Image (cartoon, rainbow, N blue to C red; front, side, top):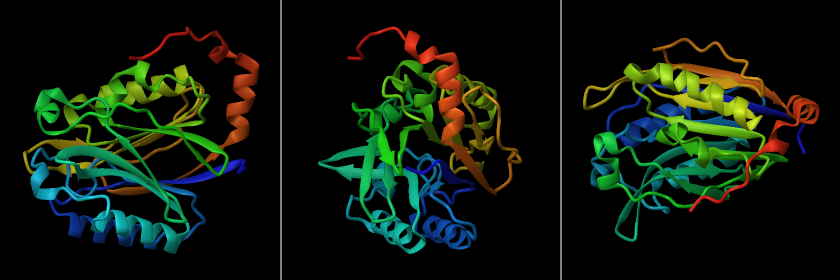
Length: 259
């Protein structure tokens, strides 16, 4: 078990519906990392931007991006996480991939599809939450709109780290800031949010505000808004253990089942 987890957040602009160009850009950023890193976090739909033109950008689980993530993870000895459009059995998924250094991967399909822009009409919603055990850290990865639904992220598994990858637009970024902090506090965990910057192909603007919050809701990063930026942060297991043992808030959780 690692007592410290070295995490890199990549806040980036995305080339609209161009997986090849986006892979090349992210490959350069990851290959240039100098310090020892355990985990790299990319935005939601990092190969295309948040598009509803699923047919134009969809890949399979044996497609170029999955193979690219596996090869890069092995080469750099780092886990990589991000979501992309995956087609499977005639359904499209906004699918998060967690690829470990040995090439093994785990998947999470976005539970809450964004009805405001019709994501629910194009993409099939996921039904299963995922908690990953990586280097002794329990990690719960979720996607963008999931952030608005605290019941889904509720820490019944005693996970250590909650991650949101996103394309969260500028007009509602104050909600992004508030909810990331709230999720860290209520779940007594580290909470990471990685959002994109730039303007997408339908004119939506993104201001970033990628961040890391600790168990007490203290912000650990100072990532400039609107700018492409790479942030390295160290997460400490002792921080989680100390406050959970002292405050014991998770012991008072209500018991219920999500259908």
